[in-house]
Image (tube, rainbow, N blue to C red):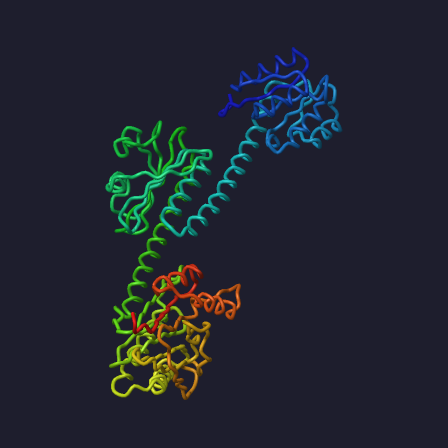
Length: 527
């Protein structure tokens, strides 16, 4: 008797032969379907999808060879093996012809029962092994696809949705996942096959620790285990399951929260399915750790970046000031963008700059330049001398690094203004006249010795100036001049509230690949 009974379609127009072949197959434990013609056989193959077809070569409507060819030509039925049998076409040429037209085995009558049973078993064994290999190959290909999608997820919710939907897709079962992000709230997602979207529900804070206690404990590793339905319902009373739950619990390192990925356990998982579930769980755990590390590093980077920028901007009579600092969307390292607003007696210094690169070094160089700038303004205020000092500091202590800086010195009462620019985007003037950029400045800092020009002008009352770093306007698919013109056009109409103008600028350019710093100020002695 076969270890794995199959559903077999026997096709023959001779009642006696049909009965004998069916009897032999039933004796071996198989379930038997019958057809007496080729068209009937094709219909049953498409509708019932038997595991194997025993096909007579001579049929009353269409021949067995043609039936075999149609079975093999249809992708939905091509993997069904066909054993042809004939009492008339029994020569070696007949056998070769049958095999050439798609048969997997060919028997000439008279056929002994043992030979027939052995041929059927061998054909089934081969095709079942082939189907398992093809199924595993599809699963592994999908596993790779889902793992890549998990590693590309930018949020924990997206990651868990990807994991449970992918698990359900591969294993064809209801799936669920549990993980603990840095915010301390357990995320729980479930999905039902074949095409339901993942749903989110709450989970008790001790859910993962309870699961860990029964499997991994406090150790690192991976454990696949089955939880009876009653125990699972105690753990999650609102769970919608109809049986036991098999799952994998993973912890990448001691001290880190575990991650759980589970599926319905009916029917029981075979070895291949358990292995796939294990790999999915491990991939999820690694992706969760990577995303958690990214979130923590990003928070640290932002904290460090903001600690290097002014904690507050002084309120200055006769001057409205607004500013923004926006970190890049996908960068966990600190950058070199900075701004500065310093009261110097009756005047105010407003500066902006950008040290090349995104790294801790760029941030520390930025901090050094800010401190050097502040020190240079003690006593006599000379923007040209201050800029020369910043250039010397960069060239002497950080050779090979460069920075752009723009310094403006304004007396809010009179409007007298000085500008020194080292390679930075020129200040943009706006107000009653048409918005315009100032002329280009001198060489950027850190390249060579330079004498920095100081331009002197008067800023009319109710006119203003916008300073910004190149992160606001640099795009891969747009010329810099085009982006600068967009900013100039936006500055043609500046709101009474400069905060609204800053918001409009940031919104117009959207999320950026580089850090953005900007400062906008306006003389408003009457306000």
